[in-house]
Length: 236
Image 1 (cartoon, one colour):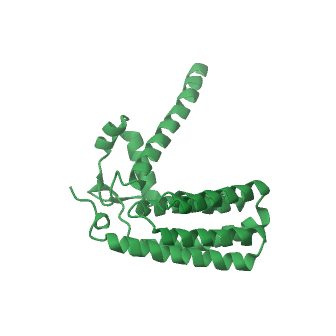
Image 2: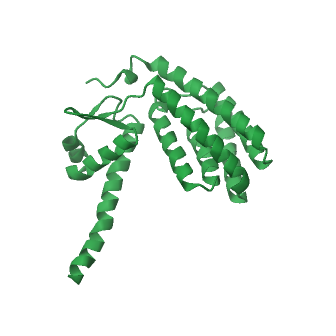
Image 3: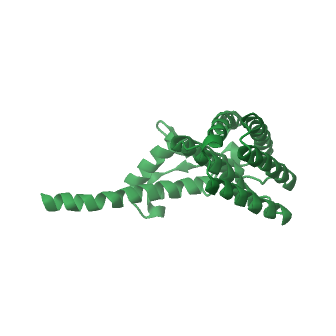
């Protein structure tokens, strides 16, 4: 009995690691558009592709359904969820409310190490702009906001905001920000950073709201331009 318990104790972490790995690999394929909006997800084919059994694939798909990356239709199966204009609007409404809260909390709890990290992110962002790069700076934008969320000291808030950025990534992969939009975002990040260091809550909340409102408008405009392509769904 003792030996059985020891063996079970050894296998559980392996199973957990496998399930997490399958989930993360499928999520990445959705984000980078290897799996396209509207595409049917067949657990048997995915299991063959990932070289695993169907069980961890099904668990991963159910988790992705809960997180809003996949939809399940009774009698038809799983599909990569299509992003609609309404969903983008709702997503950014939630993002604005949570990020303003996170920024307000960060003013009280941010430490020197986190301030230094934000400063380094801004330096990288500025260098990318100087080099005429816009696409790569999206990664820095997400990291900038996630760092502020982490600085709030509320781990649950950080996880939720990180998940929102993962969802945003599922349509930011379509098209890229213009260099002009990237420059504006950088300037607003600088204002957010200064307000955070100066612990100016009123100014910080105002800038954060304006920044996210403009980001939402830009995201909707870019998705509208792509309607009739990927966002109308997957076609063989």
